[in-house]
Image 1 (cartoon, each protein chain N blue to C red):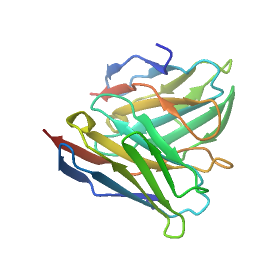
Image 2 (image 1 turned 90 degrees about the horizontal axis):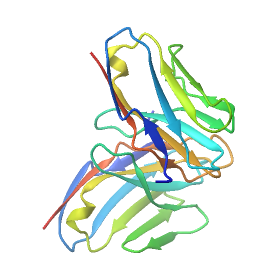
Image 3 (image 1 turned 180 degrees about the vertical axis):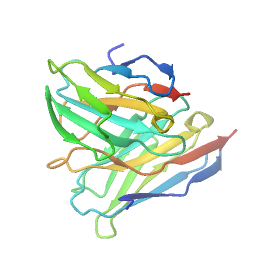
Image 4 (image 1 turned 135 degrees about the horizontal axis):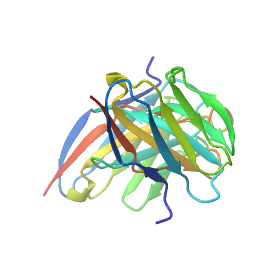
Length: 112
Length: 113
């Protein structure tokens, strides 16, 4: 499968714990995006990388959220001190150029 | 402020019918308009996309119609099938600027056999 890969697919964590998600984009895609989707809503933009540079961050991305793409390949999204409001599907997408984006299957986070 | 507004919120059609989903956008700087299909528990899948230099684009049973002056675009699904039952999202982005996709709230389509 050469699509966008996200791990884990599901994560249940206790409030206050830290979690980290990984995204492996489609090979040679230099653009990588993180989105968050809650039930009944469309995905909301969190942050965007072009190669290893983080070019844009949403105001939705509080100080508890951090994302990295150290070598311009895979990316990680970390949430520190999780809150119940962080429960959502976290989606990663990659793109070879501006415009079309291909999404992974997402990581569903449940904070209990 | 919702930059991309989608309607209706849900739609039920019979097999073989035409499904039409509408979107309106506010930011005239948007220049890329994709439609995504999402099944429960899965990520959105890119269906078809259009840029404002054309008024219509067709791929198989899916057609996008684009009206730049009205700032509206729509997805038509011809010969709808039960397998098309999913949530459909319109989105918009600025290829030359902020490349993030701004999504509508989605429309749940049910195609009855």
